Image (cartoon, rainbow, N blue to C red; front, side, top):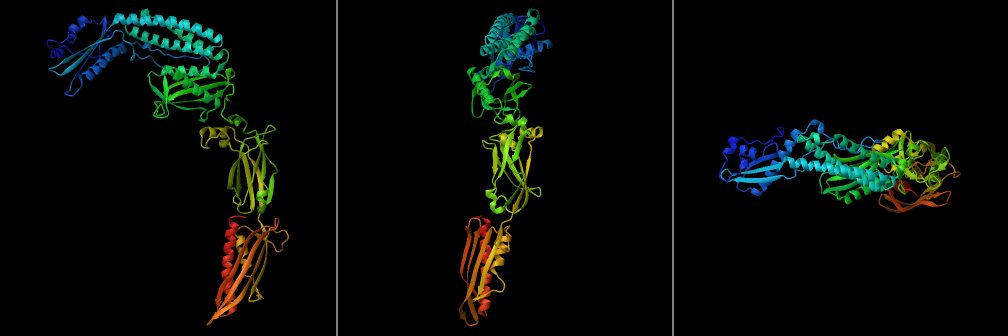
Length: 594
C-alpha cells in the first residue's frame, strides 16, 4: 500500500517538541506507523492553536473533519485515470438523459472511521487523529457491489415485466432505484481501485448493468403508451439523482413551449406532477420565495417526437440539475390536455389564413362613419375562424394614423367601426388588416418566439382603400343692423372659418348638405352718454343635421353691448364682439362631437 500517503505530514522533530507525559502514541510518527501501518490503515492527522475564548469542542469538530478529509484526499491521489466513470442513463433514441461527469469520493462512506483528540495545554494546541481499517473498507465496498449487483439484476427483470404489463410507473421506480444502486457501485469501485483492489472488480458486469438499465429506459419510452404521470415520475427521478443535498426548496416555474415561455395544459400538468413526485420522494420542498432553485423547463415537437427538458436553476440563472429527453408523440395519452399552448396550432397556418374584406374600397361620408363599419371575414381553407385577433392599422400618405385589434366572432367576422375621434380629417386612407400574432399567442411583440414566428411564418396582409368625404354645410344668415340688412355679413364668415378648421366644406344650396346652419342677428339702439352711443346685439345660431332633423348645436346671444361715436359704429362693435364669441363657441362644441 505504498501509494496511499497521508497528505498532512508532521515531522518527527516538530512532534517531539509537543511531547508530554500524557501524549498519545499516535502523536509520534514512528509509534503511529508502528501501530497503524500504511498497509492496514488509512490515517489523518491535523492540529490547530486554540485561542483564549475559542471553544475546544468546536475546534475538535473542525479538526475531525480535516483529518477525515486527509484520508479522502489520499484516496483521490490514488484514483487511477481509468476509474473516472460516467453515471448516465442513455436512451438509445435520444441524445442524453442524465450525465454526471465523474464519481466523487468526497462523500464516500468510511466505514469504521474512528477519531481520537488530544489537547496540549502548554502549547495550547489541539490535535485530531483519524484512522480506518483498509481490510474493513475493502470488505464493506465489496459487499455493497455484491448486494447492489443482485438488486439491479432483479430490478431490471421486474421493470421489463412491468413495462410489458403496462405498469410503467412501477417500472420507472425500479429503473431509477437501479440507477441509484449503480451509482453506489461506481463509488465503491473507485474506492476499491484506490486501495489497489482492481482484480476484485468485474468491470464487464458493471458496464453490462449500465446497458441493461439503459435498455430498460428505452423500453419504457418506446414500448406501449405513456401517460403524464409516468413521464413526470421519470423526470422527477432524474432530477433527484443529481441533487445531493436534502432540504432543498424550489419555486415552481414555467415549462414553456420552445423559447416562448408559454405553458400549455399538457406542460402545466406535467410540471406540477414532477413537483408532486419530488415532494413524495422528499427530495424538495415547494416554496413561493427565497428558494434554492427555480423549477423550469421547455418542450417542443420535432419529427413527431416530443423533446422535454426540466431543470433546477439557481438565483444566478445557472442550471444545477437537468433532465432532457425525447419520446414519441403518438405514444403519449394526453386525455383532455392540449399539447400546444392556446392558439399555437395556428402558427404554421399563418400564411394560409386569409382576411376577406366585404369590399375592396369604401367611400364614406365623415358624418356616416359610425353607420358604415369595415367588415372583414377571417378564413382558413374555406372555414370561418372564431377568436382570431385581427390588427387594423390605417395610414395616410404612408404615415400611421390609427390602429386597433379586434377579435373575430363565431362567423369569423370582424367589424371595424370608425369615428371622428380616430379619423379627424377627410381624405384618402389605406386600411391594412392582418392576424395580430402577439395577441394570438398572448405574448409581447418583443418576445423572441414571436419574432422568430413572424420571420418564419409571416401573416398575409389585406388592404382596403378608404375615402372619407368631409361633411357639407349650407349656411343661411340674416344679419340686421339697427333695422337694416348688413351689406356684408359678419357672423356667417366667422362661423364658416371655424368649421373649415374642423374639416367641414360648404355648399351654395341646401340640396345634398349634411348640415344647415341658420344665423339670425340684429342690433338695436341703446342709451347715449355724452359723446358715446351704445347699441345692443341679439343673435341665434343653430345647426341641424339634415338626415335626422336633429339640432346638434344652438347658441343664443342677448344684449351684446357695443359703443361708438354713433349708433352705427356702436352696432359694428357689437357685431365684432359677437363674431369672436360665436366662432369660439361653435368650434369648441363641434370639436367634441355631437
